[in-house]
Image (cartoon, rainbow, N blue to C red):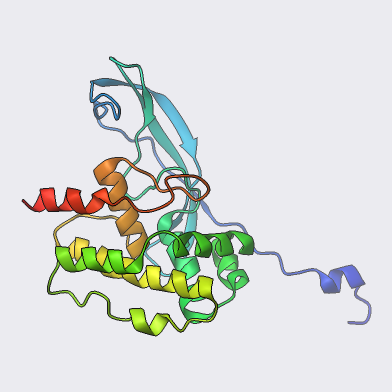
Length: 237
């Protein structure tokens, strides 16, 4: 455009940062038992994290300033952080955000850059999330577990259609995403109260709730635990 410096014409529009919501300090009177030895614990201060969370409006996200209560065991002296429902450990971008950003890329062929803009993550992060989900579990195992929990559910519907997604990595991620949606829905129908709304969030949240395991992006454990099925069968007994 005449009269506009080249650097101004080439500059990309600036995406405003996500709004930050300051959350109040909240904790019960006493902490839970120790995650290592099951001994009694005492409160031991706070730590502040800044997770990016999905709101109730689709495609709308917030960054929280979230104080987390810390506890320490009175027996083994192990220290641990207590997370509220719906907040997954060791993740800045929470699982419902990851699911929202990756599903269009894996299932619909949307570019990573496009979904990254809405979440304020980088396109490289979105591509890493797609690769992580692709290796997270075997879709047939996830679907089999969903069918065992809820025999009347249409487990496996849609898996064959996503196998045609362009690229092996996207196709693998698409199959895992669909399978997790089936299992997450089966868990809710089975009576579990799960705060997260995506299949990814519900299933990994279930594993953390049942076993205290957080599935990580860059180091083990990076896959779903096979012990999930044993826990659920015991809960139903």
